[in-house]
Image (tube, rainbow, N blue to C red; front, side, top):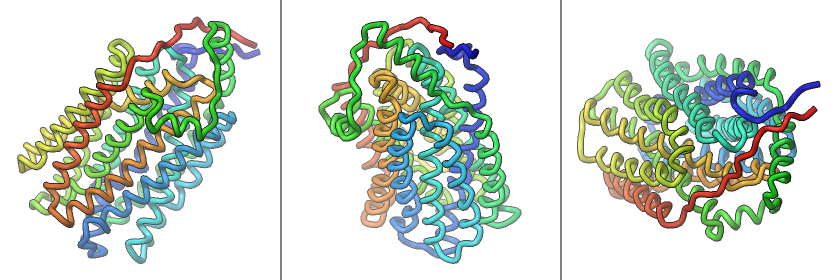
Length: 417
């Protein structure tokens, strides 16, 4: 007989395994952050910023709708199977990059990568929320995002170092094969969390919490405006990834054009996700104490200011300071947004709610790539960065107006057979 209980202490082994798995998920996408824009301009001679950013647009589109699918699958208690499928989809990614005959092979690789990220990252998020219960969601999401984005930063440096020895494409491809296989192997040992969902659902019923299981289309409609909580976090997530898409695709071009080396560019590209990663260890738990609204609003405002500062300074040291500020702002926002979704959604439809939020959030990559590419080609890269900085500030102000702290029931764990 196995006793099922909610909480980090009761589930620390599975939680830790999921943290490690999510580090490998982050590493898959981190391999590309410093080298792919350079591959576009140097190996395939792409001159249009819009064309360079096409790989981010396809990545965001594939990931956004896969997030929705993974949420739907999760609510049908297929969490572990979804995680394994996500890693199988990752296997062709490094091979397509290595053997690419044209830039569109790279774009196709990023479609597979988007599907991989949507299935694996969403599933690890949902499973961690399942395990810890309602009381420490911010802390759990801080650990989850710390692991993922620390790996994003580290893998970006690894790919740049490998690229200097083996070539640009091989620098991303060779580590990618190892990461995909390791992630698949570790995920095999993950146990499904369906029993934890059933336990929390039973506790909700015992506490007298009303239970409504809305349809997917209903949740989508609510997220567009009528549900203040879902709308606030969805639009903030959308704008957050809009500016992350800009940072991913445009900043390496700015750095190399200024005369910085690939090594210096890779370090700058890593500073943002590394700062974002480490600070989430503090900002996640703080959102459990302060509430979700303050970190989200403060983080969005800080991101917007940091983006605008990127156009007002130049040089390695000045850009490093601005990127650190951008990372701190994102660290304030990311775990609080995910925890807020867990707050407003009932356990029985939590997976779909997370999927809807991550749909909007990762459509931000698509919007960021298209908007930044168009504005950069038409008016210059500094203009594009400033516009997206202003949009980020406006998003934070909108959260301040609409988001209200949800009432989260505090329930004692009840062991079950």
